[in-house]
Length: 422
Image (spheres, rainbow, N blue to C red):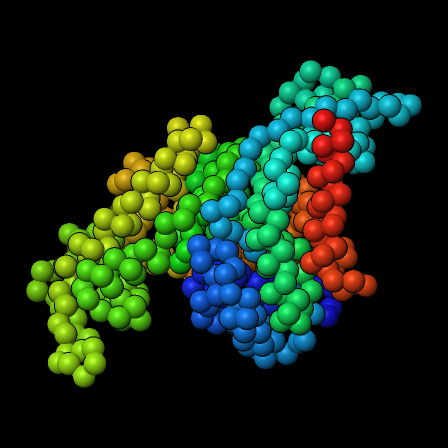
């Protein structure tokens, strides 16, 4: 593959999306191909069936390969699930070179120091995101490189996940015949695609409503301040319709996507939908008003749990830009209006941005937000604002030995080193 071509792979609970993108001579990002496959090998964002997930990955990437006319070797993959947790940490080092100037190597050394925290052996660090730096007691420093000082401190946001969840994603990608170039938290990836820099500066919350999980990320001063993943999402809405109306799951999904509404008041009472009967029975007529009355309470619950997470972050009053909704679950009509009412802030549905040409219209859809964000993560390092630990995890992939085992060994060694220091 060309160095300028990147593949983003969003392995979701209900679908697997692959997006192939490249940077042209003018440093613009063009979408070369995309693919989508139904997925039932995951539960709440975590792999529960390797073979089904592998088949869905192959199908989605093959479709993207055909569209782009390239052969994919490695992918940037997303990770989500309610096992993802985040916390704040702090580190401090001394600057020992002759002129006391802070270098990029000092910053890396400081970030490594912030990771010396006690963690369970079954968890590993996915991302370390600097919040701010302090040079000789002077706080509020965004980039300390080049400054003079003796003492350098940093407050960082550390995102962790289960080792087994990450390893299973690696296994699926390897079995499908590809290498893992990087592994990225999905709400972080989505934020690159759908949030405007101005929104990140003044304060905004991203709510990515997927099939199995709802991902939340809170930003202020161009920095991610809080992340969370909750296990109530679009599948719960589908299950409510299935049970409430006595229809099959496929029919419930069809009704939700095509006729559902998150606000019951906007539906005319006499609007109806006809679906085939089960097992040769007569057709069934369903009122759209009744359908909306089933959808609305669950959507309210998802948004209320998201509101609790945003309040817990401590940045609830700082959201001058309100919230941005994305993911397949945000496509239910009326979701933005309901979010504005529940959260009492401005709300909009976010579509992928920052793309120049190619198949831009085809991926300008909330359900492709994470996949597009993954390619932006790889092609626009300046957007990250932090160090990704995953780059060192992916070094062994494709070399001698089993990459998954090397990953776990590397994590085990890192954990052992931490506990030796405690």
